[in-house]
Image: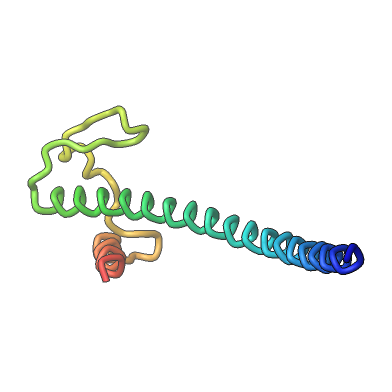
Length: 112
């Protein structure tokens, strides 16, 4: 009678040890998956911030080109100047390419 009970508990203990080992392995895999998920979420958040800044720049550029923007923020973000003063930027690069059309192409590519 005691022998069968001892044998039953011994088998149960072996099964539990096997399950605990399997759960430890699964925990390592789940931790790796969670770390990858958190890293991915961080990258997605950064991309969303970049896109928001690009969107703001695109909107300001379009408004400025249409003459609907009275003032713009330049430099460190604390100096506000009329857009007529901000026009001093060159419209061609060192190779003679038109920068306004290149900016428009880049903006159109982002919108696709």
